[in-house]
Image (cartoon, rainbow, N blue to C red; front, side, top):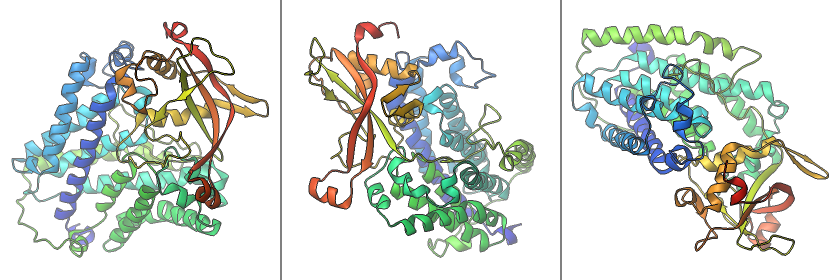
Length: 486
């Protein structure tokens, strides 16, 4: 096996440190965003959710009890353990110490993700959980690495890439006629400062990029199980593809985690070309650990049956878990691409009466497009959960010649407006700018805009990144009295 796949001591070391860094970011996000979104006074309070579920439904530490104070403790324990793993301190003790560190990290994040509702309904949450669980069984640096967790995680990378490739080919004709990138950079959730330039590439470049994407996601993943150096070449192509996605948009830690998984396709001899280090002598694995690893392998095979069938199903599921522990999941992204970008812009006023002459002031989000002259920021791998959910809202709106028709409002959005009318400090920290520092607004409203990137000429003349126009009203002016019971 080692002759076929190569030695993986250095591979394991780099992957563990990379994954620990992503866990560190994820727990920082918890500490900074969970309470205003999901805490006791959040937009979707976790205590209310926990009243409707059991531990069997959503395994979580918080099924015992939830409080914002306990959430803070869990977040800081997660940050601490992640830092311990990044620094390699968990490798300095016996096998059980490394095993316990990763399993505790996994369970703490599982406890958070399972009660996170819509704000944690992203595929990369399951990716982080699945990767963290199987990383626990890689062992510390002083123990000879096993190929079992390495291969299980390569299988995860295969499902991530192959699943994404198939979902694209099955769901949207623009992936088949190679035109999706005519729109994607402009309509993706949170563009960054380079997305505008990617969008302005010639159409032949967009079509070529789609061909490259299909090649990497549909053909290349099969090379992950080939002998070296074929597996390393497959891993390199996947990493290069993910790096292109990283520089062209903000996708939380999705691409960074996929890059880390791509490292597992290499062997120490191939990585040594870039990282010339002397590999230490590692001790043999004890019998009890060998038994655990083989049990892990059998469990992974059994859990893989449904995900494997799903890959070849006409009704392929995307970002789906068959068990509440988020192990061996289905993955995929951007099966469909929107052709036009719509944004919901929230405004407030402190005037007593609102009419055609009312002065409305705009709230600015951290990354979501707002002011057309503001340069799109780079936030990934940090995850802005509120901004992402704001991107989804226009999908429930019908746009016609006479304006827009809203098919109902999300409960969290109504509560968000209420928090703005209260000038709630915790909620306002989720935003970039609050135009009402001294006193809360009397009314807020939400306008429905169409955004498009400026042309080269418009950009040069105005300095604006976007051009926008009002399409209609998403939420008419509303006061705090109208939202008291939401």
